[in-house]
Image 1 (cartoon, rainbow, N blue to C red):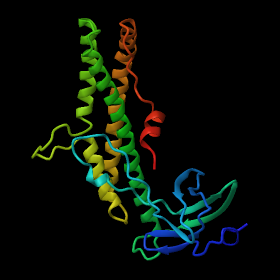
Image 2: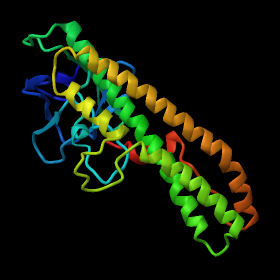
Image 3: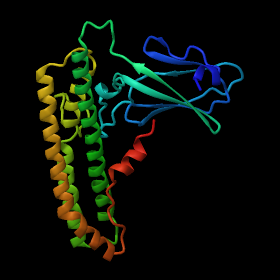
Length: 272
């Protein structure tokens, strides 16, 4: 069953600028779902509810990357990259019925850049995107430990020995986080840490549709290696302190320190 005949759609894949319109969707349609070539749902669009003809637009861009929380705005990471060229499945849900079609996203045929250069640009952008997301989760782990250790240390139930151990754990995590992001406001020297460096590079590569420079690629690889070392340091601090601290907290009748898993963080922050 085709979309045109069963759902009475027209202008199924009319492209207007950077937007693709799924035209004339009737109000009884409950949802329009879009899937990439891996079968992952990348977008769910609400169908119109007004009587008559409704039009739904899909802007084929990925949502902006999540970044570590900071006192400054990572302006270069406020936008997401385009979805890569390929075939995208469209599922239109109408009650218990599901109708399927597809749409192709193509390399810009009018671009002066070759398909190979455009592909390398997209690969490099996604490398920066994923690195920012990894840093955002690392920041969440650090903040979980810092905030909860600080709260437990301030409790009246914390003995002098336990308080010292909690403070030591917190200070080690704070030291790592200071290398992750800017912790001061209004620094006229333009302080940059890992978060700011990666965001700036991500924005520079994403803002140019052609081939990234080799220095940009090399710099991104260097930052990725630095981030991996930062993650190893965090793992070491957690392994050194966390189990022992939680045992002491439990004996003192206090809540254990809980570090968010990737899945918990993703579920909380990853909604469209």
